[in-house]
Length: 184
Image (cartoon, rainbow, N blue to C red; front, side, top):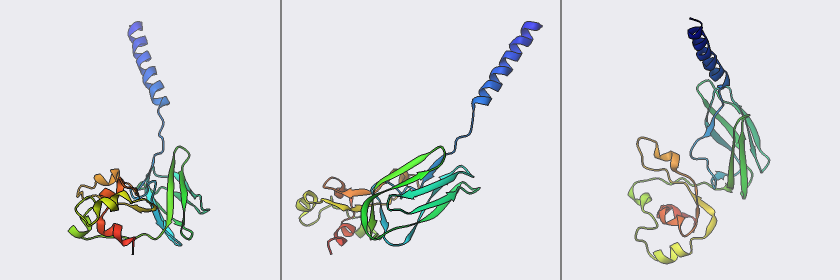
């Protein structure tokens, strides 16, 4: 009887030890539109949002001097506004909680153009265009960036999308119509 009780108590002790070592860590994420190389609209309060563990307090600090504080709400969402300066960059944005830190780098402040449409906006630089080889070879505009929202009704592909700097390699996937707006 005693060996059985010792075995049972040892098992209970191990379970309690394991449970005592477990603790909840706070997680923080940002919406996929916010990534390295992004462009934020100049001279306005831009919204920044994401998700996290309810009650988690966040400090958002931008290298241009703006900052904000926010707490993740009961539904696990957070949103705040961050004042942007006149055009310039590159800058960084640091989003911190006690347990996590997200640093967004190479951020430009300027004009953000939204383009949308059907097949005309989906026409990429790599598709046949006039002077295609020259356009691709000379696509070196580090201050011009593009974020393409993937066509995906399930919504999962957005998590692998990110802002792209204009380089000969990246420009091939850019919308040709949106890209040539910057030359006017």
